[in-house]
Image 1 (tube, rainbow, N blue to C red):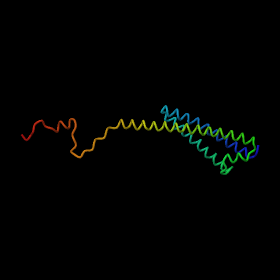
Image 2 (cartoon, one colour):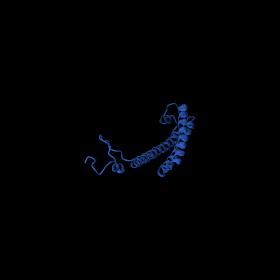
Image 3 (cartoon, one colour):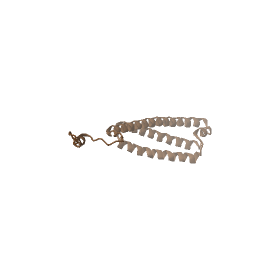
Amino acid sequence: MTVMTLPIESILDRLLTLHQQLNKLAVQKTDSLKKGNMKRLEMLMAEEGTLVKNLRQLEQERITVFGNKTISLLLEELQEDERERISQLQEKVKAEYFLLKERNELNQQLIEQSLQFVHLSIDLLLPEPEPVTYGKPQKKGYEAAVGQSFFDSKA
């Protein structure tokens, strides 16, 4: 095992763990969205924020250790057995990433559908706006009956 393998493997392991945790939260967020449990959703989003912060710190660590080299470039510098192990770990991270991306897209769709439902409900509850006319406003109901006389006063 070369000296470089340890940091790559460590970073990928932590990256995998963070993505697995984010995926668990995303599944719980889907459930909360379906049930309309906003309190639980807020708690999950706070946890998610912490994990995203950890991802950013891990990315800064990766840049500090390896600069802007990609995993593919780093793999070329490793021996064959190390390359295989790190490559497998990289594939696991990719798989978790794509699962997370799909789940987040589903959650986004659920949020959009919920917003559409809320807007529709609000539209149904609001009264229809009065049509704009350029004449004297018409009186309705009791006001109309009181304001009119059955007898022509000019007669």
